[in-house]
Length: 249
Image (cartoon, rainbow, N blue to C red):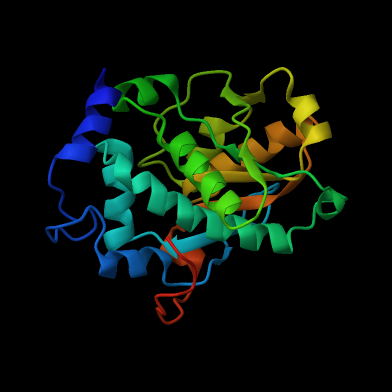
């Protein structure tokens, strides 16, 4: 029920920008530039976990981008899924052009966007699956740009994990280590689809993406890389000049 009310409210209620509070639109022009005004770039957590695939991020996590992601995930600002998905699509395209998985670039099927799973309790509490929603929006944006893509939500949490917030890198790795598995039938997707790009809204230490990569690889998935909307500023590195036209969102 909560999900339906969120959808209806997003259509009929006046909105302020979720990034800066400016009235008139859920995402103002200035915050749109902050989200999508940089070319997606490689993100490097410190330390880099063993087994982490190459990760590309659309923006550094902070200020308006942080507010946008939290508004979508925690406060149900569902209209933000499309611009966040478009930002993620830009990172997927860069990841797809620079991946190094053996044989992945030779595969002709669509990109398979595999979202990092959220705990069922978190999804139930929020009333929607934020990661999957953004992944679906990213796939739509890619297809709209002529890039075949589909979402393959095949990852599952096999055991309970704690909230990663507040945990350091070592504890985050321990928290999710061995926690993910792949649903049955994924082997058909690997055969018929293209290369796998793991997707998430945010990367901080890389622990969740590393565990997702382990689970997909163990199930025979051809991982090309990973893409996120945002990465911690220290992982994103120095910020290039905002251009406002790096990619559309």
